[in-house]
Image (cartoon, rainbow, N blue to C red; front, side):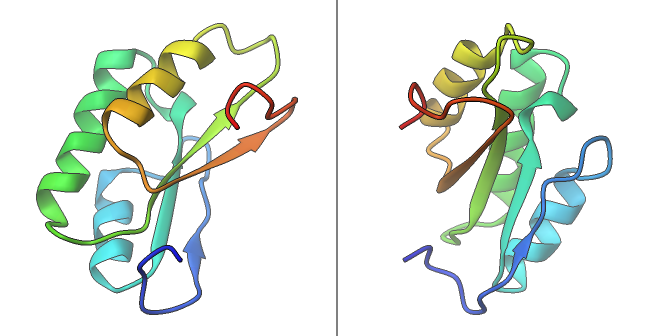
Length: 101
């Protein structure tokens, strides 16, 4: 369903996950996710997602974790960005996933 070779997801780790991890995982045939909040601005998030896509041509398995509670004021813009960048999957946490779904 995700277009990956192995049923493994590199978990989104706050302040640990980065472009290098995502690229290595996806190019190895697994899914890899990053917390949207690892990037402080929307342009930084978009740039990182585009860089991953550039370095993993034709591959699937790119995911983003969104904090969906009210503490994340950037969530609507983050969601817009991951849709724009055609992220393969989204993980939600700390709130209702209703808007994301």
